[in-house]
Image (tube, rainbow, N blue to C red):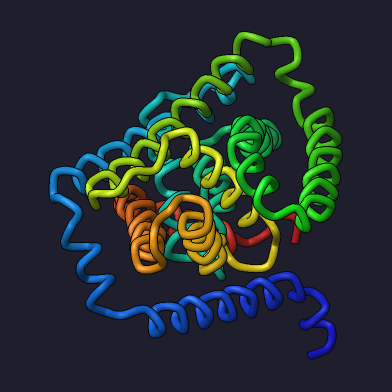
Length: 303
C-alpha cells in the first residue's frame, strides 16, 4: 500500500486538487443566484454561441497543424488526416479520461499503432507542448500589466514564479529541439500555428462576452486567458479542472469588469466549448484503446 502511494503520489495529489477546486467551484455556484447565471446564459445569442464553437474548432485545426509540421519536419511521413485523427483522440481523452489515460499517452500509442517511430513522436509531442507554451508567453504582458498595477503585493510572488518557470522552460527547450534547430522554417511555421490556435481561442471568449452584451477589450482577454493558462500549468489538478474555471472567473470579474455570475458563466462555457470541440476524437478512440490493450496482452517473444 505504501509503495503504491509513493508511486502514484502525483496522480493522487492532482486528483485531490481537482476535487478541491471543483468543490470550491460548486460553492461559488451556490453563492451566486441561479437566476443571474441563467439570465447571463440567455443573453448570449445562439449565433454568438455557434460562432464561438466554430472559432474553437478552427483553433483545434491549428493545433493539428502545429504537431503535423513537427512530425513531417522530423521525417515522419504522415498525412494531415492521420495527424488530425491522433490529435482529436488525444484531446478527447484529456477531457473524458484524465485520471486513467492522458491525451499524450493516447496520441503516442496511436502513432505507434500506425508504425511511426516512438522516439521521434515523443520528442515532437514535447516540442508541441513547449511551442504552445512559448506562444502563450507572449500574452503575459497584457495580463500582468493590469494585475500588477492594481495588486502591488503580488509583484514579488508573480515575478518569482514566472522567472523560475521561464528558466525551466529554457532548459527543457534546448534539450528537446535538437531535431528542429536545423529547421528554422518548421519551427516558425509551428509557432505560427500556435498563434492561430491562440487567436481563435481568444475570439471564442470575445464572442461569448460580446454576445452577453458586455465589452472587454480583446487585448485584455488575451492577457487574462494567458494568465489562466499558466495558472493551470501548476500541477495541482487533473487537466486544470476547477482551477481554470476559478482563475478565469476571478480574473474576468476583478479586471474585466464583469460581475461574478457573468464571469462564472463565461468560464464554464469555455470549458464546455473545449469539450465540444474535442468530440470528433470519440470516433477514433476505441480503435486506439483496442490497439493499446492488444499490445499489453501480446506475449513477449523472448519469454
